Length: 277
Length: 226
Image 1 (cartoon, rainbow over the protein chains, first blue to last red):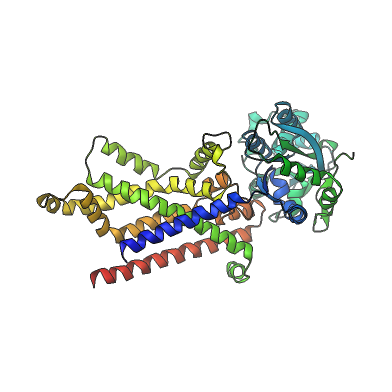
Image 2: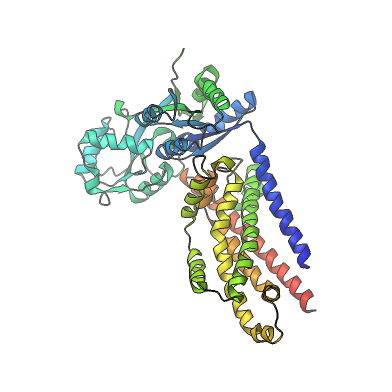
């Protein structure tokens, strides 16, 4: 093989790579949504986005990370729309001028799942704080996200309500995985620990083992999702018009109906509750 | 299940495989161009700080992908120094990250191979007063078959890493999803069987590339020594 032929092959391959990335760039009608993982892992976007694309021709690219990281990425202007589930953090994001306004989009709820042996005796409970107190009293294993996500923030508020200081027992019965919902479920189920998870992720999760829902139905377990357009003044690069059109579609009749119609194994995962104007 | 997956002709799967190869092979070629040259230069020349350079590149072979991903993210983020390029969450960003990740591997390994060969040739080069650049070219050419293995080491690292491409690519469906990020995603969905099947497919791809490289090497070697 001559060296000239080799060089030509190299140049051809590299420019092919560069060209195809350039063509991905040139596709203007696309936006980036910084999103929580539950909406992506449960398959909601696979249901919604083709409908939206069909109607508008806009490609929605979803970056699914924890709520904490999604907000940070949006603050760095690396997304056009933010779709997460931690109202206090979202309101802070808006108050700090990174985007807005924030609108309620849909809800579901959190549940605590546990092993069939139920070492803390919490199965069937509908009082989340009391259940966590019993888990703590029994020194039963609990796997926490520990990643500043929306679910983690909810969990911390529940521990606070239960009057348990988890920092003191971290690494003992309280195990912080520092990873996403699915990874935490995999780890928690592997070690026989209780786990707080959103119901959408739980229903669509495929590695449940013999785990079942132990605690559900507490008002404190309410899980509200919100949607926010990133501020064009702070981030001139964002596509405000396309982002707004996606938000408008989600919040009005067709989008809300599409959210309601998504189900896994016959169970509805998300309940639309955008304000009607 | 892995075979069923491939045989099913699932368009999404082929798209993901295609992007994996495109990203990692492009990063590999960029790394080889930089790394072979740099490695050979360090091997045949003597300059102050050479030992430091060798230690640095040898150390950088152990760069954690997630750290490389983070650095490239900070550079390419809209609020970063290269944000205006708009490269974050594109295949180009993934190529940049993998190039940074594997260039030290290609550089350090080719430096060692070329240096060993150069030590054999050194006296000959001296007696004929061969200019440095020409000497570099000569040893590089003679080391070409060993350097294929170096390239394969770099390719193996690039195609297998998940930390860097996850951060700078974002694992976006139909845009930046590659084999490793797809495996991570299926694992987090709890679909361990599908994740494992994808892993087997990834290994099969690596094996195909290695087999192609080996046959290229032996064909070329036969011609060279015929």
